[in-house]
Length: 87
Image (tube, rainbow, N blue to C red; front, side):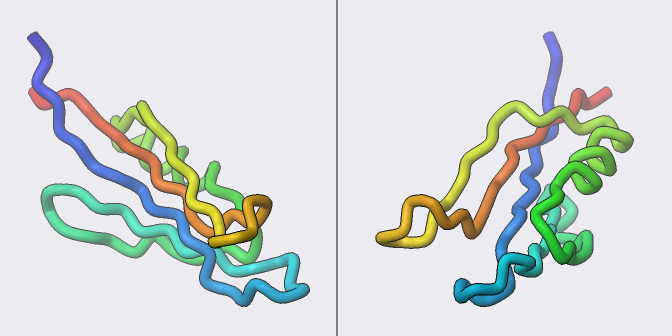
């Protein structure tokens, strides 16, 4: 039986919701050792952060999106659930 260690990667918009189409996005990695800030992107590009987690052995198994209230087409957050086997 495999024992898993769990974590999450939060990718949140940090810019304004006006006409700025190049909002800043902050990536924060949360695991049993605490939270680590993984940097800021000028556009929504979470692949760099997902690749970093994958290189450390993490597997993404769920993704949930958060939308701006009363504006279903404006994304302001994505959370990835991650796991990796414990040896």
